[in-house]
Amino acid sequence: MSYTHTITVDLSYTDAVERTKEALSEQGFGVLSEIDVRSTFESKLGAEAAEALGDYVILGACNPGLAQRGLTAEPDLGALLPCNVVVRRGPSAGTTVVQAIDPQTMVELSDTDAVREVADDADTRLRAALAQLPAAAGA
Image 1 (cartoon, helix red, strand yellow):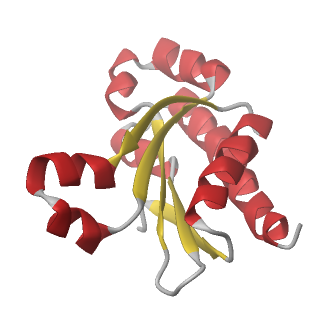
Image 2 (cartoon, rainbow, N blue to C red):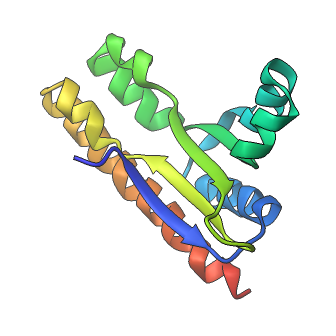
Image 3 (tube, rainbow, N blue to C red):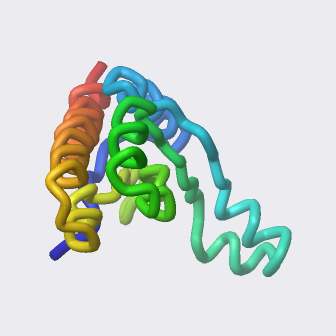
């Protein structure tokens, strides 16, 4: 089982980060955290390590309604939240890769109906957010 949904878009890294945040917001997700991995690598490991990785950010996305339903059903689920969304330099110039955690991985760890329902809803919303990005590239 793949644990991410991945797309490559014809957007600059900066545009992809902004449009990803917008698409997540339209699906009811807020960004609770933003980890600039490149900057962290640069400060902790040096410029060479940062350059090898390139632009890379991890967005901690949370849909409060889904989180509340999931945590009410299974409080331990908090260890898997928020849903991580990665925006990183693409394989070729002018492209950016956007990856969202596949919420179905939660179902692999918990077999409760409530968690399955939350994972299904989150999966639908994250896929919809990613689907908005290629269309945004031509706008």
